[in-house]
Amino acid sequence: MDQKILQTTRELIDEVGYPALTVDQVATRAGVGKAAIYRRYASKAEMAFVATMHEQQLPPLVGTGSLHGDLLALVRTFHARMAAPAARQLAPALISELAVNPELDTRFQDTFLAAEQAAFAEIIEQAVARGELAGTVDPAMAHLLLLGSLASALYILNLPVDDALVTDLAAAAAAGITALADRHHGDPNGAAEPR
Image 1 (cartoon, one colour):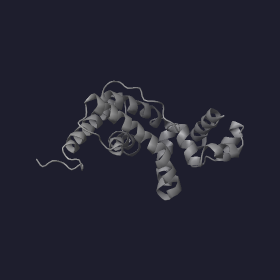
Image 2 (cartoon, one colour):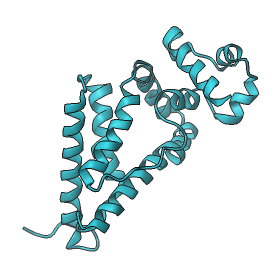
Image 3 (cartoon, one colour):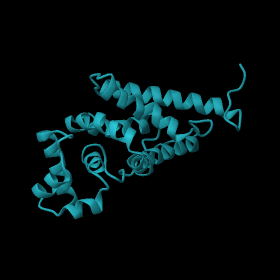
Image 4 (tube, one colour):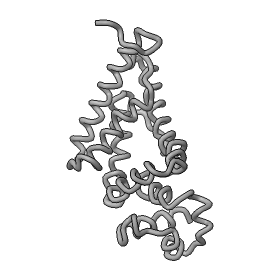
């Protein structure tokens, strides 16, 4: 049933656009009750986000053996979904909704963004264990460096994002994370050492 709801949501976003999308339309076309949708998703925005951006649970990370490789694998996964036409249409509307709806914003922070930052925490932990990083880095900062840059390129700067750019974003994020780890390593409070 979940896949039918999500597939129907994607189809309707393509046909009518996100602003005109309703849960009633999805329920009718998917052949499910509206209550069944609301048991799974707290709002139209959440249903559309799961359908176009990523599932409520991210797939397990497969380590590549390097920080750059792990970041590249992660950003390629996100790029494949974030660059899709339905996602590009949804993102600006969703950002607007999050800005004016604190309850929705909190739910997104506690579910989707928490899952993404947990993935970054795991990548950083593995890089520290391999000796690639001198110390840990705030997963939120790593998240900003990589996926924040990807979102900006796609939704604000409207750049043609191909695999070469995605590879460069992963390399830049790896360099930034490494620099932050080096900077914070000498000071337990995270302050930069004087130069």
